[in-house]
Every structure is written in structure tokens, then in C-alpha cells.
Image (cartoon, one colour):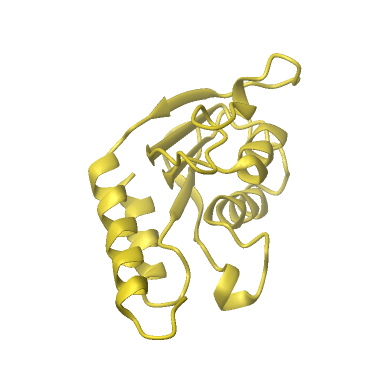
Length: 149
């Protein structure tokens, strides 16, 4: 989770929400990492999880990430939870819950839907306070910045 928090901190230098993700192989070795790049790259799919999953798949040379763990600072949305299921990750670990858009237990529970052919294990709340602090600081700064919304 510390690696994912480092990625999230890097996002603070841009206009992107500070979310970071890392994919670990079955031995815990990082295969890919990412941060939100929606604003930086004008990419609606530029979520940290998608960026990290793509990097891990490239590193592994295949789209199936069997045995891997996706670690992310914020509970994945429906798109990212679906990507984790489709990538066949063994585990999703996240920090802060996302009551507004979370799809790993908060608003929806995509990854544990019994109708799907793959259901990763979920570990929630890991370093949640640190993850939440980054998000709170970002949104506080957004409210204080003139013309930010």
C-alpha cells in the first residue's frame, strides 16, 4: 500500500484526484503501478487501477493476472472493479472506502457478484487514514482555489 500511496502523492502535482495503484505478482513483487491520469491525459479510463493493470499485463506479457494482487488507495469504481475481475486478479486490497462510487462493497459489490465467473478476495481499509488524508487535502485545496468549481 505504501507504493500505491507514493503513486497517489505523485498525482497531487496534477489536477487529477490522488489515487494510486500497484499490481503485485504472487510473490509480492510489483509488476505495474499507476495513478489517476484522467485530467493529465484527457482519458476517461485513466484511473489508477486501469493504468496499473495495463502495466502489469505488459510486464507479464498476457492479460491474465492470475495470482496477482491489485492494491489501490481508494475503493475501485464499477469500471475498475470490473477490470480487476476481467484481469483475473486473485485479490483486491484498498485503503479508503468510496461511499459515492465504490464498487467493492460500498455502493455496489461487483467483485463478489456470484453471477460472474471470477471473484477476487477483498481486503479493505489498509492504511485508510493515509489514503483519506490525501483525498481530503486534494479536495480542500480544490475548494480553496479560485475558479476550481
